Length: 92
Image (spheres, rainbow, N blue to C red):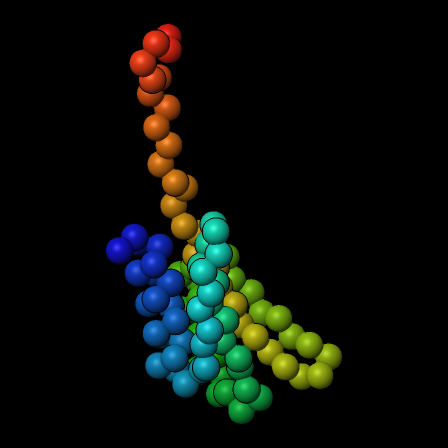
C-alpha cells in the first residue's frame, strides 16, 4: 500500500476517533478527507483535529453562512512512474 494511502487512512481514523464523521475520496492526484464539525465540539477536540490535519499536504476549514463547518485535508499521491528508456531503434 502506498505511503499516501496509509497517511490518508491514518488521518481519517484519527478524526473518527475524535468523534467526527469523516468522508474519504480518491482523486487522480490526491486523496481528500473531510470531517463535519458540529457546533458542540470542545476547544480541546478542535486542537487535536487541527494537529491531525496538519499531517496532510494541505488542509483547511470550509465554513458556510448557515453555520456548517467542514474540516478538510488532502494527501498527494505519488506521481506515476514513467519509462523514458528509448525503445528499439530509438536513439538516446
